[in-house]
Length: 76
Image 1: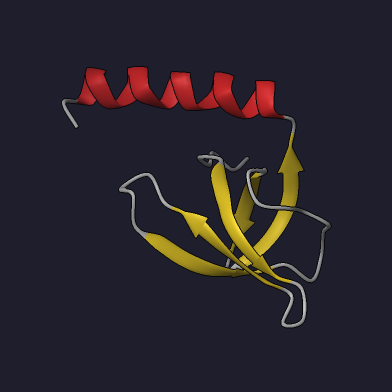
Image 2: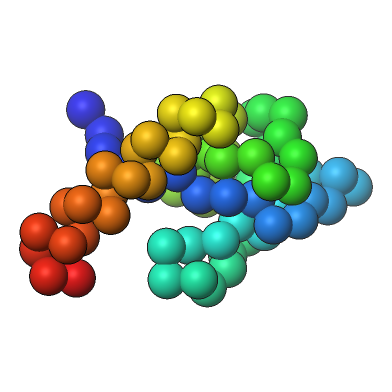
């Protein structure tokens, strides 16, 4: 089982099939978009640089709230 934080897509380059995703720190990185269809604002799961799943917004928000609670408990 994998435990991941949903990442939000900031922008997409359809020609290159790449997306800029926002990390929890606020920094951004590039992820490969060749496996799924997604657009800016979507929340996604990234594994080894590939976007492997698009999450419903409600599910992503609920997961992010759980991560916030875990971060608080751990003092992060």
